[in-house]
Image (cartoon, rainbow, N blue to C red; front, top):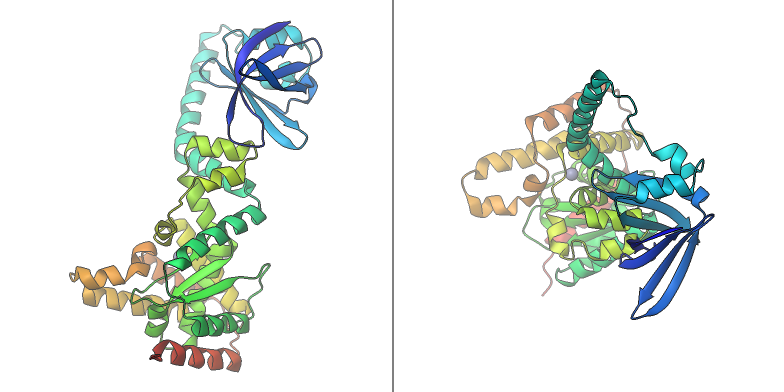
Length: 375
Ligand SMILES: [Zn+2]
């Protein structure tokens, strides 16, 4: 039997427990102690350890699912690998996850070195975004929705919602007949800033000023399709995951997603200014265009909307006061590429466009509502 101190995550919270670990013949016993009392003892079956991570330091991490909780044991003891080998020969622990270079052949070692360098470079450029994306995928829909609802509520307490216009906007969106796997909630917020954005979960916020700038229903439809594509592809939560610290990522990996999200971006106002990557923007444009096509809505609205905002951007260039109001452009940089991409996609396909009277009615209603002044 071998024993050592270790860190332990119980899979129920992100709290790190100091524990005593015993490597017994058929069991790994983990004892959580506090003030001289043993609070809990976990018994792991070594054959069921799902993963063993050996970092570049002496730290060894063991992963285990215990009553559906994903637990992690973090052992910082240089003897750990040796003990595991001695105690559990032939078990999954030793067979699957320990790789050592046995050959003394210098060329093999040299080759291994090159592979490691390439791997590190790969991790740096591709692995980190990939890892955060993986983590974002691990966050269940229900938690994302709950979290998104919290942010939305916080955000809306400081803003003025135009409820009549919000109702019309929701009706307009319904009339677009976009295939939705979940109900989305749209809000019109009174603001002289030109912006629209999607919160994590299923919320789209549209400032009335951007609706005011549109000149036809197709432009508004394009804007909503673009924002809904962000929702559908979970871009907000994925962009947030990319900015998370490794500690938060670990909390999510071990199953404490809600706790980790609680500590994130408390400031809902910052999320409004969340800048997506170019890739996300292009993806949202393309998926948005596909949605318009499927719904038989004239997709030229997308290019028109971009042109309209870009013309305005050029007109006010140099006037920083007005530039600040064009917030949509700072979070959705309109590169020439994006406009070209939209125009190209529109030209390439043959579109069947059907006049949608319902959309027209709701659009006119909406325009009236945002322009009405209530005394
Ligand atoms: Zn966007």
